[in-house]
Image (cartoon, rainbow, N blue to C red):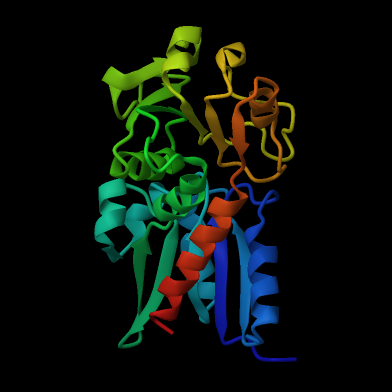
Length: 260
């Protein structure tokens, strides 16, 4: 059995839904990287990150999942320019400098999302407006990606208390068919519908969706959420988050290899 000299992993809570462990295990096996492994570090509090670092001296990098994509920022020594702009980190490189460990943060969610979305957009005409469901760390990356494409964004949330853009933010109870009709791209960044809560979905007027709509769900397990099922029933184009996950995972690997 090969000695694991390069350990990677995923930090978040909960992680029972995670696809990353299987994805990287298959990647390492296919490429003969028997010295590499990928573990799930399920932390019910981000303060437990110190224990993960102390107990795993061979840890070279890790991904960050919900709900810690913003909370991780205060634990980092360096943050990339793009991650600073976004305000969230989903990739950390663990760097050994003069026997001291340094944590460098990056964001690959934005580029991973953009790469997954572009095949569904008409090159000559992007949707004028997008409605982002949810206001967590994943929302920040989606907002950044959409704005980089020149697409204006609005938000739907359960509470306006922590809204990043109050002028463009609706409570779910305020969403009308007319609002949905004016946003031909709708992106779910909430965990609603994710395993094991399969019957949940964002509360929007689905009957207002049309074949002109594109509905993108960052959830990838299950492959078809209630959100996407309802969208398809109205003729809308539906896309789950698997391709985004694969894209951001490969971008994460590229970052870690820069320090290998």
